[in-house]
Amino acid sequence: MARRREFAALLGDFRRTPVLVPLGDGPGPDEERGLLTADLGGIRFILAFSDEQALARYAVARGEAAREWTYQTILGARLLDVAVPAAGVPWGVALDCADGEEGMVFPPVRGIVPDEAALDIDADRDAGAGHER
Image: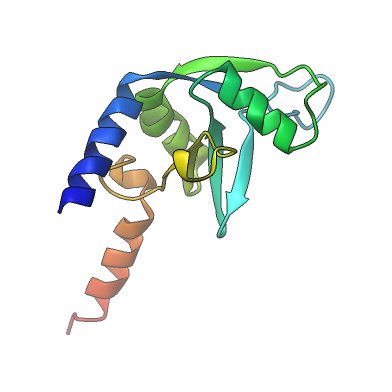
């Protein structure tokens, strides 16, 4: 129960905090660049960073420290409530992913993202369908 409360507090802090979200390369030279994402366990995560130092650690870990990183500053709640559902597929948010245990993952489940973007809604529907007569 204490871990759940701790996570809820971290989620609340993230929702109220502006974070840096690098822009990935768009599909073509004239196309808009989207938010930088990565796959983890078959789920796509938007990569977000608490500050420029965290983004710099990520760049160093990728061997791309010399590259110029373009980013947007976006409120955590906007990422979870707007960007994730707009993707149309299950997406979560990974915060400070180069920082090991100091980083945080917000998966696409109820209570973190809107129900229409949550993976566990489908699992609940599938489980319920097996009990119908």
